[in-house]
Length: 347
Image (cartoon, rainbow, N blue to C red; front, side):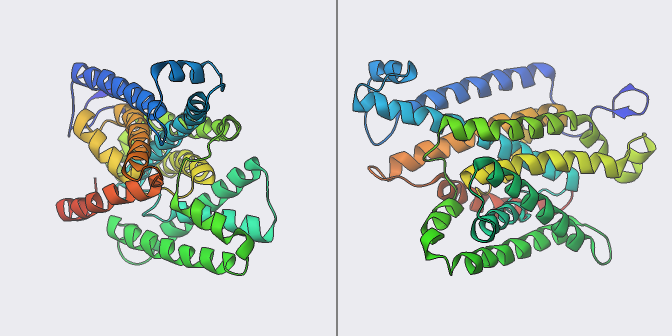
């Protein structure tokens, strides 16, 4: 362990990487993300030329191709911001719980946000985008607390296996409740089912502007928690011995993850597995130091969600697959691999 000042743990003994290697990966990831953004604007049900792309980027909609480009731009931005939010929230949850299976979907946080939104629509008649986001964040927070309390019951406290089981059971239960709440309302059932799959279609700049403050606040809180997560990774007793308030550190980091997950779910639906896959891949590139892992997880989440959107448009042309379906196809085998490889041990 390397200490930069008394009582502050800033580096971990496992999975370290040199700053040069990390900088190389950072540049490569940013270049790949820029390439994916350009590809997302160019690819769709209608082929567009370079001049059409330039026209769409400048705001012109004189032709159908330029109008198509203008629609793809906010869609790409929404996939970028929400993908980054889900990747970052997954890394935070894995760090807070020291659980390699932690993910907003697996721990039931996404479905808690979904249930809260559906209840708000059906029983409280919420309609504004801001009300959707606040309701989703509240539901995500309540679900996270519920899963942690259930997973903490019994001998041994909140072990990774118990948290994963509690989250899976909660997710199934909340999914059934969503169906029960929506079933009598045939007028909104179709829209809710489509939203539950998870997608970035129909994105507008207004939706992005509404959700951006919540994502920005969650990102700032999460990134500022990186040093404390490094301490928590050493174990609660050692972290407390180094001067960390373990309970406060976990609560603040969890707040950031809940803001990110709830806001992203409100605008895109409960997209799963992004927060599971991306942090593990990021650890292979930059190690376990959260000061690097958290930003890389955000970039990786953006890359994964934009890639899933591009694949969804290409494989089902002239129709498309929602990103929630594509990420599930990628994430489910990855989840099985992690279970077999990690044997559900702590990070």
